[in-house]
Amino acid sequence: MKGSDSHARRWSLHGLGPWALLLCLPLLAGCVAVAAGGAAAAGAATGVAYYEGDLRTNLGTPTADVNDAVLAAADDLGLGLVRAQGDAFSGTFRYRDARGTTIRMSTRSLGSRTTRLQIRVGIFGNENLSLQILEAIRKRLPPD
Image 1 (cartoon, rainbow, N blue to C red):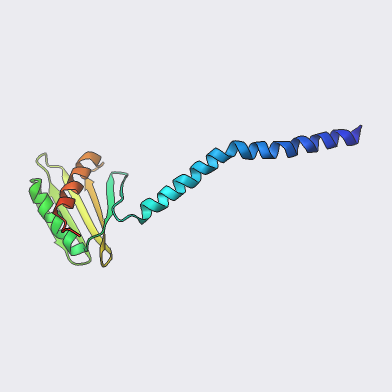
Image 2 (image 1 turned 135 degrees about the vertical axis):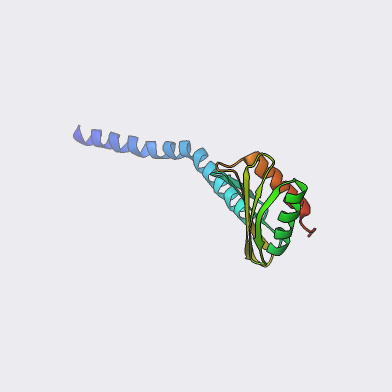
């Protein structure tokens, strides 16, 4: 009797394994899809991330051209220049909008044709205004 109980218990545990695996497959497939999507987004030069008030994106354009586009776009948007400094490898820009909100932008070279752009509006950030500024900058970038 003792042997048959342990055999029955062993069989039920073995039977549970395949069912547990089948139940988890959709979850695992989702993780793989998310990981693949994240890897694809990380490899794209124009992906945009908004995190903790900062908008960050990588642009497939040399840093000096992005710096010029930042200056031109800010002028297009009527932003008041507080400070601008940049070269072929990086840039820092500070503006104020009509309400007096500070807008900070920075660029950093990630290679000969890739630039990281970061935009911060105010203390806590403003995603909508950051996206509008990014769009104005993209319009001022030289064509590929």
